[in-house]
Every structure is written in structure tokens, then in C-alpha cells.
Image 1: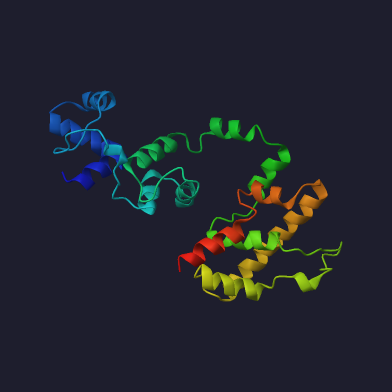
Image 2: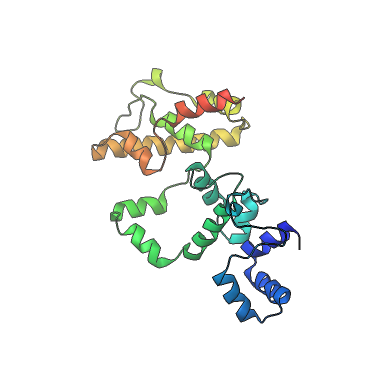
Length: 233
């Protein structure tokens, strides 16, 4: 069995992996499970466990997500938060395999939500996702746009307004997002989300930065991202 096939079975298809161990060692499957539980088994030709989990795996994020049954966006966000590496190490896959065991478990979900107010829980359920880099950048841009709305949502200082067309041009230049009507429609929705958050922040008497942090978005994301991505193009 080559290295990739061995690692694939070991991490993604435990049933076949145990069957293979049973075949290799000439033991029944229960004994193979106990053997795998008590010892770290390596492919033939691998002399030591030292450094094995620190080696890069041959698997892509989407492949790992599909095989483990985890959303690829979650794995991507774990990478953004520097919880896992990319390219992924075998250590990262080992971690994700463990995460999968509790993913969606009601006990852990309840424990996480128990520290939040009812309103915060409702916001999490209803809140639209802003998962891509350019969406978070656009949200942060609109959130930090120094405009004021009256009670009828009319802009009181239109000279400060950042127009959709300008944002779309920046996204195309910096993030390579196609500048089309679909993008502009999405930007209008993101702008509405940002404006609603600004209104909610004012009502609650908190800084708009806090609304961004509730969405797990750095309130200064637009400046950091443009500087970082512009330097890489």
C-alpha cells in the first residue's frame, strides 16, 4: 500500500483501515482495533514516529472536508484563525478528525450557547454569513463609512458616501472578484447589513467596532486586507 493510500484509510476510512490491519497482521478486526488503539502504526518504510505528524499531508482542504463531513468554510476559517496550517499537516488532520467526533453534538452546542443572551443567540441564527475575504472587507468598509442616517434612512451627509461602483472596482483590482451586477447586488446587501449594525450599535450605546467583533470581523479589516493583498499582486 503506498503512502497516500495508507494515510487516506488511516484518517478517512477507519473501517477499511481496520480491515487492512486485520489482513496485514493476520488477526481479527477486534484485535486490530485494540492494536490501533494501543499503538501508533506507521506504513512500512517509516522508521520512527518522530516528526510524522509534523509532515505535510497530501490532502487539500476540500478533500479533507468532504471525507470528514465538515464544512469546507469551517476548515478555511480555522486556517484563517491560525488553528491549522496550510498545506495541512498530519497533525491538523488528526485534530480535525477529533473535532468531527463532537461537531454538531447538542451537549457542546448548548454549553457554547449558554453564555450568550437570548438576543445574541437569535442574531447568530439569523445573521447572514460574511465568510469570504472580500465580503468581510466590504462590510468593514461600509461599517467605517462616516455617514449618518435620519429616521427615514436618508443619508444626511451624502458627500461622505462610498458608492457601490467604487467598492466594486476596488474588489476587482485587489481581490480579483469579477465586477458585474451580481457583485453589486451582493454589495448592496452587505451595505445594508453594515448600516443595520451601525443603527443597532447606536441604539445599544456601543461602538460600531463591537458589532464587527460580534461577526468575528476585525473592524479595521479593510485597511489591513488592502495593504496585504495589494502587496501580493
